[in-house]
Structure formats: C-alpha cells, structure tokens
Length: 270
Ligand code: 13P
Ligand code: ZN
Image (cartoon, rainbow, N blue to C red; front, side, top):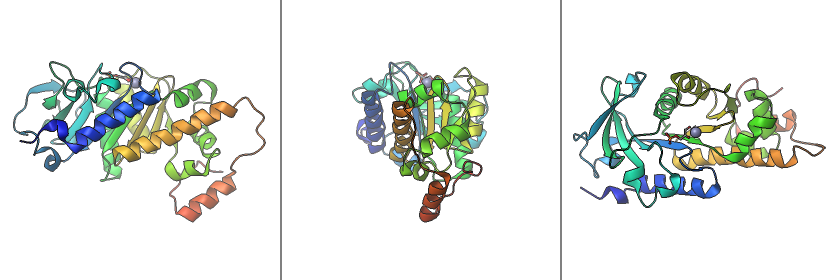
C-alpha cells in the first residue's frame, strides 16, 4: 500500500482548505468540504474491504450506495488540515442500503464527518443527476456573501443580478445564477433537502446569515465558483453606499451570453 498522506487527491483537498482558512473564510471549524472519489483513485492507498467504523445517516441516500467521499471532520479547523489530515478529515463509503456511512480512513482517533454530511450527500445526488462529471461540494462562511445577506433582498433572482451587473466574468462563471434559501437551522433534514433542491437550479446556494454552498466538477472549479461570487459580493458591499451611475445592463449580459454560448438560467434576465 502507498502512503495515503502522499495521495494527490488528499494533498489538493488539504491545500485548498488551508487556503480558505488564510482567506478568512473559515473561522474556527466553519465550513466543510466533500469530494467524490473513484475506487481506482483510493485503491493504491487503502484496502476498501476494511471498514473501520459504521456511522448512521438520518435520511436514506441509497442512490449513492457504494460511492466514496473524502469529507472534512466535524468540529475540525481548516487551518489544521495540512499538518494533520487523518485527524481532520476521512474517507467514507455509502453502505449498500444507503442508511449508513462506512469509515475507511481518517477521523482519528474517534472523530466523525461534518455535521453537514447530509446536505453534502444530498447536494452530490442532486448535481450528479444533472451532470455525471460532478464531484465536489463546498460549504464555507465567506464574509462578503454572508454580509450581503444582511443588506440585500433575499431572493435568488435579484441576488444573482446584483452580482452579474458588476463584472462581465460573473455571468460566465455562474450562468445558472445564485439560489438563496430562506433562513433555516443548519444541520437539519429540512435544510439539507431545501439546499439540494436549490442546487438543482444553481451551483451556488446562499444560506442567509450563515454562508454559501458551491458545487462543481473539481476542487479548483468549485473553489473558483465560490471565489468569483465572494469577490463580487465584497465589491457590491464596497460600493453599496455610493450613488450608482452605471452597471452592466441586461442587454450587455445577453451579448456576453450569446458570444460565449452560455446556458443562462431562465427568468434571471429581463
Ligand atoms: P462542522 O464542524 O460539523 O463541519 O460544522 C461547520 C459548519 O460550518 C456548520 O454549518
Ligand atoms: Zn456552516
């Protein structure tokens, strides 16, 4: 067996979490990350027949049976990931009946995956049904998007438009817009289900007064998605108090969409 601590997928995972900590997106244990892995990726590093522990899940996710996930641990700090991966994250497999998670590696000595494991799995399921290349779900407490939820109306259409109007890049990076949830208690089945439902329409979902969820095909792409929304949320806040003289119009946005062949979610442009 090769050394798990040198597995490229684990190093990439820990590096991006460390980066998020340094950006100020991850106070204390704030945020969590899950990446779907193929058996071929992990087989050189662990015996997939050896289950260390089994943990129950509250909702059945049988559609993900047999899938492997690298997931951050609950209560774990992103800033500790690089120097202690096995204590701060782990590899799970969804059991054949979809009622439990099999720990194959990590969460040492007796930790557990994130308290948001359910919304992660349900978002994976929602996105996989739309895109077989989907792999990554990220939840983070990035401050700009979080701050925007105090001063901006909480509806996805106007939230999306406010970001799109600021930079021609925004509609290119998230042509499916941003979903905004009503406020709910995180960690509940209801919040998990509602987040996954929103994820069907937009790969970015904002949790008011809490944080944001992003989904994508790779860690870089998913991080870049959240990073683009977050940067423009900060830009929005930096000019929100000033008289607005101009911004990108719907006509401008439509021209960008046509030029780049974007599939823009219906109903977001006038
Ligand atoms: P965990 O430490 O359980 O991952 O929770 C962090 C968080 O951001 C909850 O929303
Ligand atoms: Zn959170």
